[in-house]
Length: 453
Ligand code: NAD
Image (tube, rainbow, N blue to C red):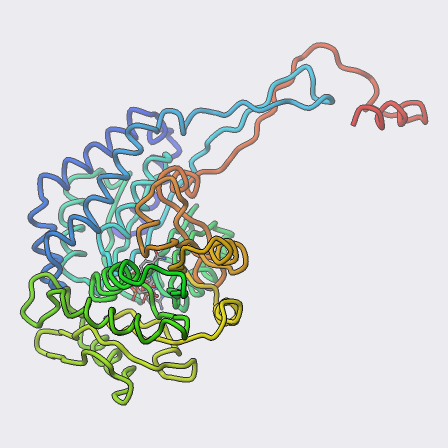
């Protein structure tokens, strides 16, 4: 069946109101949880084939997040769905006012390859929880995980509710010609602009989860041991192929030498060798070559071992780096960590402000003035103080970018809201209709209106 037919069927099903009841939504989410947990081994195998990711990393950074989202909705859906009563203003009395949580309709979710499960499945969970239908187009770049999602989900779900579609650029371009009620996209800012333009033709609302260069600022007031440990973990997790990984470090000149020494020691302590089963590989040869091309050999202070056959790039530290270096011209998305120094904190904030708004920013400091300035004076999607990446694991925080790093957000109730229209409904009593708003108008009526409104 063509994708157009499937979308028509989804629309018909949505219009039948079948997707809207609490029971229906919960049943879909429970089924999803059951299908994933019964097939966990297939999930581990497919992602290992795609880029050598370990079971441990797959569970902690993919499956646990998916289970967390499902559990959150199973627990909170009833209250999220409930129309919210709000106050009614004087001119509308007697009456009552409510905000209905109205599903947008037929949604399209387009995923990225670097966390192929959670970036595809979590938005789909939000779509279904919010009472929508969903067509999911995972990334073709992570081929095995894409195939697994097609096989498992299309076999287990009614296509009128949820369908997984395969395809690359050509197929996605065709898909974008169809009229959806919501498009949720995860990927690069370049492709994000293509999605936004296509959505604009139908005035379809979008959530764009994009990327960029996320800084980690290390000040003289940082705990350097903790800073290096956490930065290394977040940077080399998934071999740096993480949208919220610290892309580069900005360190205070006063502590730079000490910081770099601890950083080198820390990175050596981890098992990042070519045969390590703990270290993820680069997704493909194209990205492998792109990454090598970003390295300036004269600035390597650690790393640079590679193995094309294994698509392995050793964690590599580059220092001293400035904004003219090749590595600073694009999002790195790999295990290369450039280090820049700054002379004073305000100037460091300025460097961040003078570039595109990042998806994440991280500050390592125990100084309250620096923390306040960091949180208030620069724009970024979200971030942490004295940690990296972990903010996205708190479902009470909205996850998303700003400016070049994205539009909108999700996770927990924010995901529900991303797929929901807040529909205002005012209910009036049918008694007590004053004549005042009807013509003919008079000065006396106007005076009353001024008092009332
Ligand atoms: P990408 O933009 O190349 O691809 C994303 C999706 O768009 C894929 O499904 C792909 O098939 C499709 N696509 C690619 N080119 C297209 C085109 N011309 N027209 C229509 N569709 C097209 O991104 P990627 O390489 O999969 O992921 C890496 C990027 O995603 C990085 O910038 C990263 O920071 C970002 N990212 C962001 C988040 C987030 O949550 N904000 C998460 C992961 C990745």
